[in-house]
Amino acid sequence: QKEVEQNSGPLSVPEGAIASLNCTYSDRGSQSFFWYRQYSGKSPELIMSIYSNGDKEDGRFTAQLNKASQYVSLLIRDSQPSDSATYLCAVNRGTALIFGKGTTLSVSS
Amino acid sequence: DTGVSQDPRHKITKRGQNVTFRCDPISEHNRLYWYRQTLGQGPEFLTYFQNEAQLEKSRLLSDRFSAERPKGSFSTLEIQRTEQGDSAMYLCASSTGQGANVLTFGAGSRLTVL
Image (tube, rainbow over all chains, first blue to last red):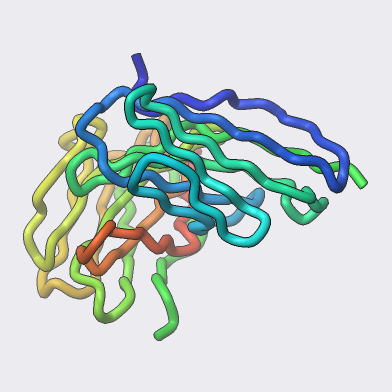
Protein backbone atom coordinates (compact mmCIF):
# COMPACT_ATOMS: atom_id res chain seq x y z
CA GLN A 1 0.00 0.00 0.00
CA LYS A 2 1.36 3.38 -0.97
CA GLU A 3 1.74 5.93 1.79
CA VAL A 4 -0.47 8.52 0.10
CA GLU A 5 -2.92 7.57 -2.62
CA GLN A 6 -4.88 9.77 -4.99
CA ASN A 7 -6.80 9.09 -8.17
CA SER A 8 -4.68 10.51 -10.97
CA GLY A 9 -7.71 11.67 -12.95
CA PRO A 10 -8.19 13.62 -15.04
CA LEU A 11 -11.18 15.03 -13.20
CA SER A 12 -13.21 17.20 -15.54
CA VAL A 13 -15.83 19.66 -14.28
CA PRO A 14 -17.67 22.55 -15.93
CA GLU A 15 -17.04 26.10 -14.81
CA GLY A 16 -19.03 26.94 -11.69
CA ALA A 17 -19.32 23.33 -10.51
CA ILE A 18 -17.89 21.78 -7.34
CA ALA A 19 -14.72 19.75 -7.79
CA SER A 20 -14.08 17.02 -5.22
CA LEU A 21 -10.59 15.62 -4.77
CA ASN A 22 -9.81 12.68 -2.51
CA CYS A 23 -6.77 11.24 -0.78
CA THR A 24 -6.10 8.32 1.55
CA TYR A 25 -3.01 7.73 3.65
CA SER A 26 -1.53 4.74 5.43
CA ASP A 27 0.32 6.12 8.47
CA ARG A 28 -2.07 6.48 11.42
CA GLY A 29 0.57 8.55 13.20
CA SER A 30 0.34 11.38 10.67
CA GLN A 31 -0.80 14.67 12.19
CA SER A 32 -0.49 17.24 9.41
CA PHE A 33 -2.22 17.20 6.05
CA PHE A 34 -1.77 19.54 3.12
CA TRP A 35 -3.10 20.25 -0.33
CA TYR A 36 -0.69 21.73 -2.85
CA ARG A 37 -1.56 22.96 -6.32
CA GLN A 38 0.90 22.52 -9.17
CA TYR A 39 0.47 24.17 -12.54
CA SER A 40 2.17 22.50 -15.49
CA GLY A 41 5.89 23.24 -15.46
CA LYS A 42 5.72 25.02 -12.10
CA SER A 43 6.54 24.01 -8.54
CA PRO A 44 3.92 23.06 -5.93
CA GLU A 45 2.27 25.86 -3.96
CA LEU A 46 0.36 25.38 -0.71
CA ILE A 47 -3.37 26.04 -0.84
CA MET A 48 -4.72 24.38 2.31
CA SER A 49 -3.54 22.72 5.50
CA ILE A 50 -5.61 20.79 8.04
CA TYR A 51 -4.66 19.17 11.32
CA SER A 52 -7.84 18.09 13.12
CA ASN A 53 -10.90 16.12 12.13
CA GLY A 54 -13.65 18.03 10.40
CA ASP A 55 -13.82 20.75 7.81
CA LYS A 56 -11.65 23.81 7.23
CA GLU A 57 -12.79 26.48 4.82
CA ASP A 58 -10.73 29.13 3.05
CA GLY A 59 -12.56 31.05 0.37
CA ARG A 60 -13.72 28.65 -2.34
CA PHE A 61 -11.66 25.80 -0.85
CA THR A 62 -12.75 23.38 1.88
CA ALA A 63 -10.47 20.68 3.26
CA GLN A 64 -12.01 17.73 5.10
CA LEU A 65 -10.16 15.32 7.37
CA ASN A 66 -11.28 12.00 8.82
CA LYS A 67 -8.44 10.41 10.76
CA ALA A 68 -10.41 7.29 11.65
CA SER A 69 -10.90 6.56 7.95
CA GLN A 70 -7.45 7.96 7.05
CA TYR A 71 -9.06 10.16 4.45
CA VAL A 72 -8.50 13.74 3.35
CA SER A 73 -10.48 15.60 0.74
CA LEU A 74 -10.50 18.98 -0.97
CA LEU A 75 -13.63 20.65 -2.31
CA ILE A 76 -13.37 23.53 -4.75
CA ARG A 77 -16.59 25.48 -5.09
CA ASP A 78 -17.47 27.62 -8.13
CA SER A 79 -14.61 26.06 -10.09
CA GLN A 80 -12.83 28.38 -12.52
CA PRO A 81 -10.70 27.56 -15.56
CA SER A 82 -7.75 28.98 -13.60
CA ASP A 83 -8.22 26.10 -11.12
CA SER A 84 -7.09 23.67 -13.83
CA ALA A 85 -3.94 22.13 -12.37
CA THR A 86 -2.64 19.06 -10.57
CA TYR A 87 -3.61 18.88 -6.91
CA LEU A 88 -1.16 17.11 -4.63
CA CYS A 89 -2.13 15.65 -1.28
CA ALA A 90 0.72 15.60 1.26
CA VAL A 91 0.94 13.97 4.67
CA ASN A 92 3.67 14.26 7.26
CA ARG A 93 5.84 11.26 8.10
CA GLY A 94 7.83 12.60 10.99
CA THR A 95 9.35 15.82 9.72
CA ALA A 96 9.16 14.87 6.04
CA LEU A 97 6.16 15.46 3.79
CA ILE A 98 5.08 12.52 1.65
CA PHE A 99 3.13 13.35 -1.49
CA GLY A 100 0.60 11.46 -3.53
CA LYS A 101 0.83 11.28 -7.32
CA GLY A 102 -1.64 14.11 -7.68
CA THR A 103 -5.04 14.49 -9.30
CA THR A 104 -5.27 16.49 -12.50
CA LEU A 105 -8.28 18.80 -12.56
CA SER A 106 -9.62 20.31 -15.77
CA VAL A 107 -12.27 23.03 -15.56
CA SER A 108 -13.99 23.79 -18.83
CA SER A 109 -15.54 27.17 -19.61
CA ASP B 1 12.95 37.77 1.11
CA THR B 2 13.02 36.39 -2.40
CA GLY B 3 11.70 32.91 -1.62
CA VAL B 4 13.55 29.64 -2.28
CA SER B 5 16.09 29.97 -5.10
CA GLN B 6 17.47 27.10 -7.14
CA ASP B 7 20.27 27.06 -9.65
CA PRO B 8 20.61 26.09 -12.42
CA ARG B 9 17.02 25.97 -13.62
CA HIS B 10 17.91 23.58 -16.42
CA LYS B 11 20.84 21.23 -16.86
CA ILE B 12 21.51 18.93 -19.81
CA THR B 13 24.34 16.48 -19.36
CA LYS B 14 25.70 13.31 -20.83
CA ARG B 15 25.42 10.00 -19.06
CA GLY B 16 28.33 9.46 -16.70
CA GLN B 17 28.95 13.12 -15.95
CA ASN B 18 28.58 14.69 -12.50
CA VAL B 19 26.10 17.48 -11.84
CA THR B 20 25.53 19.76 -8.86
CA PHE B 21 22.44 21.74 -7.94
CA ARG B 22 22.30 24.60 -5.47
CA CYS B 23 19.42 25.69 -3.25
CA ASP B 24 19.17 28.92 -1.26
CA PRO B 25 16.29 28.65 1.23
CA ILE B 26 14.24 31.45 2.74
CA SER B 27 16.66 33.13 5.13
CA GLU B 28 14.89 32.43 8.41
CA HIS B 29 14.09 28.81 7.54
CA ASN B 30 16.26 26.25 9.30
CA ARG B 31 14.85 23.17 7.60
CA LEU B 32 15.72 22.36 4.00
CA TYR B 33 14.36 19.49 1.90
CA TRP B 34 15.24 17.93 -1.45
CA TYR B 35 12.62 16.18 -3.56
CA ARG B 36 12.67 14.60 -7.00
CA GLN B 37 9.69 14.72 -9.34
CA THR B 38 9.22 12.86 -12.61
CA LEU B 39 6.43 13.36 -15.12
CA GLY B 40 3.07 12.25 -13.81
CA GLN B 41 4.34 11.62 -10.29
CA GLY B 42 4.22 13.58 -7.09
CA PRO B 43 7.41 14.88 -5.48
CA GLU B 44 9.44 12.06 -3.92
CA PHE B 45 11.29 12.83 -0.69
CA LEU B 46 15.07 12.51 -0.94
CA THR B 47 16.59 14.10 2.16
CA TYR B 48 16.26 16.86 4.71
CA PHE B 49 18.48 19.08 6.83
CA GLN B 50 17.90 20.77 10.15
CA ASN B 51 20.44 23.58 10.03
CA GLU B 52 23.66 21.87 8.85
CA ALA B 53 22.71 18.38 10.03
CA GLN B 54 21.36 15.89 7.50
CA LEU B 55 18.74 14.13 9.61
CA GLU B 56 16.96 11.86 7.16
CA LYS B 57 17.76 10.24 3.83
CA SER B 58 15.36 8.28 1.66
CA ARG B 59 16.34 4.89 0.31
CA LEU B 60 15.85 6.59 -3.08
CA LEU B 61 19.08 8.48 -2.39
CA SER B 62 21.63 6.07 -3.84
CA ASP B 63 25.38 6.25 -3.19
CA ARG B 64 25.72 8.40 -6.32
CA PHE B 65 23.75 11.17 -4.64
CA SER B 66 25.18 13.39 -1.95
CA ALA B 67 23.72 16.46 -0.31
CA GLU B 68 25.37 19.02 1.93
CA ARG B 69 24.40 22.12 3.83
CA PRO B 70 27.76 23.18 5.21
CA LYS B 71 26.86 26.33 7.11
CA GLY B 72 23.18 25.76 7.62
CA SER B 73 22.29 28.18 4.84
CA PHE B 74 22.47 27.08 1.19
CA SER B 75 22.53 23.43 0.19
CA THR B 76 23.99 21.47 -2.71
CA LEU B 77 22.83 18.20 -4.23
CA GLU B 78 25.43 16.38 -6.30
CA ILE B 79 24.74 13.44 -8.58
CA GLN B 80 27.79 11.47 -9.66
CA ARG B 81 27.98 9.28 -12.77
CA THR B 82 24.56 10.36 -13.95
CA GLU B 83 22.21 7.83 -15.54
CA GLN B 84 19.27 8.43 -17.85
CA GLY B 85 16.96 7.44 -14.99
CA ASP B 86 18.18 10.49 -13.06
CA SER B 87 16.35 12.78 -15.49
CA ALA B 88 13.80 14.60 -13.37
CA MET B 89 12.93 17.88 -11.71
CA TYR B 90 14.86 18.34 -8.49
CA LEU B 91 12.88 20.46 -6.07
CA CYS B 92 14.18 22.19 -2.98
CA ALA B 93 11.87 23.31 -0.19
CA SER B 94 12.41 25.02 3.13
CA SER B 95 10.45 25.55 6.32
CA THR B 96 10.78 27.19 9.70
CA GLY B 97 10.39 23.88 11.48
CA GLN B 98 7.86 25.51 13.76
CA GLY B 99 4.26 24.48 14.16
CA ALA B 100 2.93 22.37 11.32
CA ASN B 101 6.10 22.62 9.22
CA VAL B 102 4.69 24.13 6.04
CA LEU B 103 7.08 23.68 3.10
CA THR B 104 7.77 26.42 0.56
CA PHE B 105 9.17 25.15 -2.73
CA GLY B 106 11.67 26.65 -5.12
CA ALA B 107 11.13 26.67 -8.88
CA GLY B 108 13.16 23.49 -9.30
CA SER B 109 16.17 22.37 -11.32
CA ARG B 110 15.32 20.26 -14.35
CA LEU B 111 17.93 17.64 -15.22
CA THR B 112 18.09 15.91 -18.59
CA VAL B 113 20.60 13.10 -18.96
CA LEU B 114 21.34 12.15 -22.57
